[in-house]
Image (cartoon, rainbow, N blue to C red; front, side):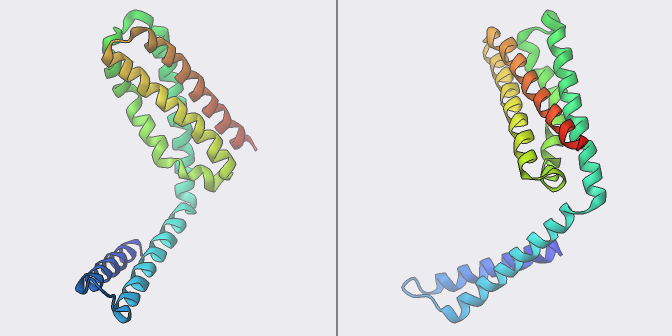
Length: 177
């Protein structure tokens, strides 16, 4: 159904564009309006397919586990990285960040829409806001490592840890209800 929606959207968009380009001074509404309607039907089918997929209980269960595992792994890896202290040279830290966090950050981002389906928009906003702040701090650590701002590395590692721990606690709290 989603594939058919995209086909309708593309056909409607291309047909509408073609009709609009035929005469730059006027629009042939008899052909343009049906093209817009076809594109709108495509958008409607895409949205219905996405909504149906988002309510699939198998997917919701899998995404719920992914969210918790990804956040737990991020917090665990941050704790380990911070406790390593000087064992990881600050200039090499960006490579450790890529190795330790990239997969978990992507897993969480891919499954985050499930939060709204399972727990509502307020829980989604609370958890994703904490996650996004932590992700920004991780990115800042990566940049500080690459640019040689060594004092910022530990500062932003600490801030990232706090944000991801808050996100994990908020997720655990909504799961408990």
